[in-house]
Length: 143
Length: 334
Image 1 (cartoon, rainbow over the protein chains, first blue to last red):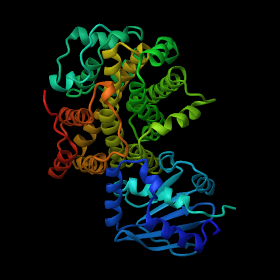
Image 2: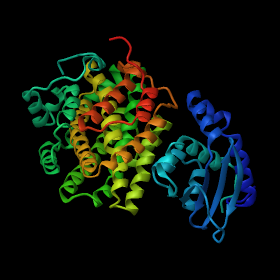
Image 3: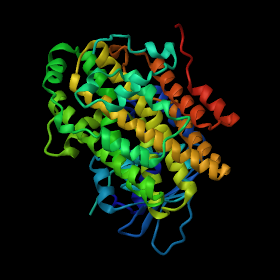
Image 4: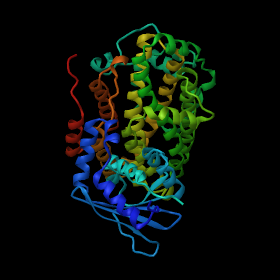
């Protein structure tokens, strides 16, 4: 199993995000919600840098044409450039992986927007929250 | 609770005029007397002062007179109604609507303190009172879920955890945005543009539109059926509290735009984000057992929005009018 925030894990995240939420996740929400999600995904032009504050590293995700075109770990000494930079503590990454709700992770300010246009970011908030849930479900060893 | 008008009657009746006696009844009722107040009158009362908004000291003085003790409510009849008189469909619909409020009260309680930092001294009094109101409303729902619905838990978060499965996925749009806007204010408490964006989401959309609409749905049901007297009493008193919050919030936005007319852009930008995600639902809430249809609830939302904007003199840009038309269904029949 890949380690959390390793290259192998980032590769698996890329594949999972491109595939999107599985049938089980889709079955419990209305089709119109997923239509909106799929529409946003198809046109989303932005990138996310999702930080693990304790490590000073970021998971960089670039979206284009409905797919993830770049997904990698940015180390503490690497240049950081993304449309939206967000940060979360390691314990909250682990809690998310262990089943904590992605919506509440945003609402309870466990993951916070550190750079980027807040109002633009929230126009695609359902897409972001569902993608966060997809990332959390990628198998990984959390030390 | 003598009048048993259908829950949606007010949608077709339009705004009602309140007599001085009705205003006094709303303003001066003790907690026990609130049971006799019509929720539609209280919602009308919210709008009564929007054209000549009271100042913050007046609102603070009203708070001191209207404060109520959430522990004075007796939920024993509500428990009987819930368990023995309401159908399973009514219970499920009710809890699906009320859970948004259960979590919403908690969210508006904890995200408000940072807004106080950049406020005038008089507004700080009003905001301090509002934070206490929201804390009391959080306890009100905690008690309702424990004592009537029967959820179990050692503390407030346990009960929030237990009711969260009823909360829709789209809840994150206004309340996640509020959390992030609060963080923006934490970093820049005197940034007036950020304060106006925050105020648009909190006071205009969440309190002025979402909260008043949700209150109306469950309270009209309770009044119509003659059920849940403690819920009706406490939540109608909550609605009276919200009238001060909405009036204070609209006063803040109106003053901000009068001082700097370019602030209207911040209001429009915030509404653009909110409206662009508000036409989507992730799960079907069956309002019919409570006497409502989906479209009637959405009409109620947008009636509330338009009345606030009109009353405080905030116009919409053409693109926002278009956006609103796309998400606003027409109320058929009448």
